[in-house]
Amino acid sequence: MDTLIPLGYERQAPIEAATAAFLASGGLVRQCGLSETQPKPISMWNSAITRRKDGSREFIQKEGELAKMIRGAASIVTEFGTARRTPIEVRNKLRALGEKLTTPQVEQIAARHSIELAQGGKLT
Image (tube, rainbow, N blue to C red; front, side, top):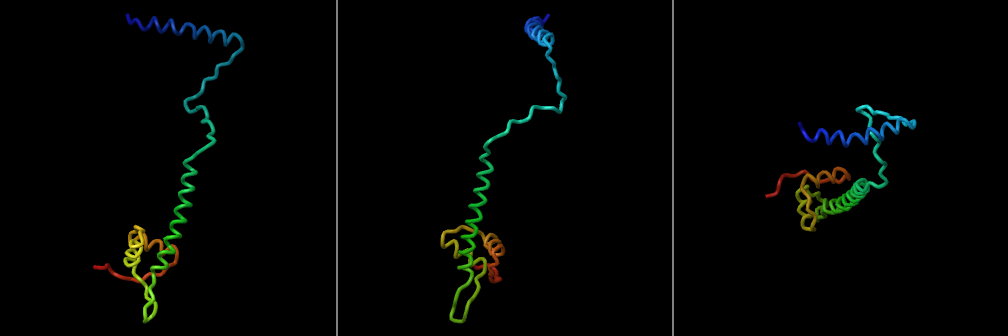
């Protein structure tokens, strides 16, 4: 015979006695269904939301600064008039200024901020 079974009975006896005393004093036992759970405690602080909100604000500010730089680098004044630079030329100009952007990023920021760039192929 397994020796753990009598030990289980010995541990269960005080629990059953306490349950019987609780019910005898007018206590009520409510059994919850499988789908019922205790509600989660309300959290008073969620730092992830704050980080995302601030990150979005920082991204918008940074993109605005990049748009100003792209607008400044998008055109060049020559003796024959104003000429537009291609996205690749603007990207190279920004890289010289220390901003690491790709050509698609330059094109997307220019499109979002209505900056006109010249159509052009790749530089060799």
